[in-house]
Image 1: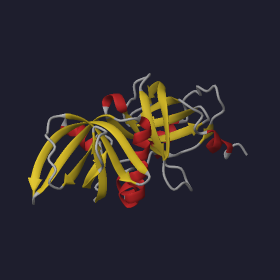
Image 2 (image 1 turned 90 degrees about the horizontal axis):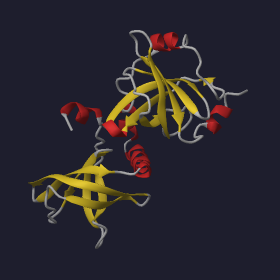
Image 3 (image 1 turned 120 degrees about the vertical axis):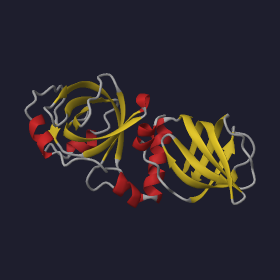
Image 4 (image 1 turned 135 degrees about the vertical axis):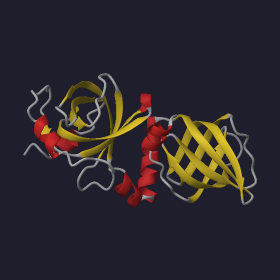
Length: 236
């Protein structure tokens, strides 16, 4: 992963006790979480030594409500003040674990999420105005709705920010700063008013077109009818 990719993956600094279990055997051991994101975590682990540059199946008990089972690579190991510090890279992480991880972060670092999650998102008024001139490409009824969202492109480990233009039970119309390639799979977190945490959903880029010099307009087909209940609020 290059430096630019590393900066694109926000690290959440959450210092709290957690437990881990290596390769699914033995008991959970106590350690201290330092930071975490979708690509890995850093932790401090007393006297126990784990050899670096090896692959491990790691069970992570973040708290009583969140346990992750992830394939990891031990990237680095340092000893500071008689404690072993480790950096783990997530080789493979399930969608359900990503969702649990975000809920964990939102629970223990809500101010950090609110401060950094939408950082860099432009106001978007000019983009939104230009995007409304596009011909509708709709099969299902869509309703104008402007929501901020953050997306993750797992295949390229790329994160980005966008705004919705319209929304239906089966899809989203988005405006983005960078072009998204058709057939790309996305994971998305929408900032929904009156909802305590972002709404998680997944979809696929169906089409993408330029919107002048201000950005790009694209259509997203959702994997499930995740937004059915949301769109019902806009039918009246």
